Image 1 (cartoon, one colour):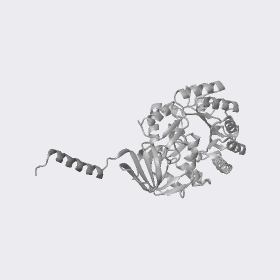
Image 2: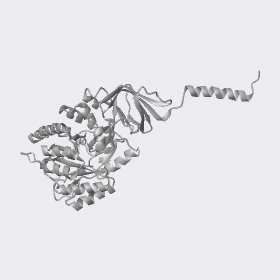
Image 3: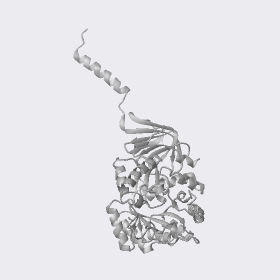
Image 4: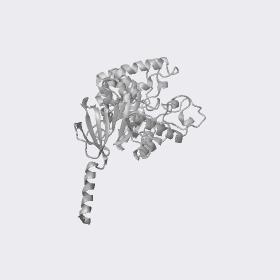
Length: 429
């Protein structure tokens, strides 16, 4: 019997609809992640066989037994521990380990070459699981950190979400003021010289103008300024000067991170309103008490001071490391808000998990070390509504590691998968 053209068209349409039902088109914006175990650092809870639904750059659902949406891309991490993306709040992406030896990089390298190195360093840090970093001064690379941040944000190059501070504020003869060089040679300054209150205010305005997210202040000198007998650091700023810096930064909706080894410099920075104290390895009991009373965050950067070469292994350096451990243990006991920061750049990029190992070695529980690099650090950065946990509505910053970091902290050095804002940058094998 002869079939009409209309009936043939209907038959073909029905056949196509069946094929469409069997093979639905993949929804490019939806991703379902199957987890072996999912750790919530906020309360330490562990969900076995959890599923995370990611829609675009944000987390849509989290839980056990969730149905996989039709058409979603599926990522199988059932053999791994899944965690929020890690946060390092003290980095130097424009600095490389060789820059710490010999002549400063403002002499030996062009800013263009240092920027190229910074691009490679940012990729390594991201692949190590760090999806957000606060980069505390470009170490003489000018505003290259701003350019790298913007390049990452625009998707030109891969890297962590960067919050940058461009030039740190220092004083003549202070930290990062090119000490020991020939005074007859004009050398670019790696930090901003601000020898007065007015100079500090003007420099903050300049830095904000060119893209700084944070302001970094050198409240004490460097190791060469530490008294070799008493281990007393050199203070660089008064309380009034710190207040002036903090007030001006606040006017521009910026916070202040204070490099401070201890002594009066650290206490002046705390009393003056700095949001975080960096290093602090020589702080006394009064400074620790002030940190608690004022709710100031402390970024200890433990591992960077461990001697790595024979030249580093001096008696003073060893004494400082012992003191650092004592201060860290006192601060934990006192309830100081300790955040994760490494000073990476002084050592190899991509190896920042070493800080976790030292924190746990010094007595911190693995869960607290994980919190220091997620929930607590997100609070420091005022980004706790966006990052730090795997929750509905937050940015999909998700990593997976081999093993269980709550049982063995070294698992955090075995990152197998990295997603930042819904985009995969490192896939599990």
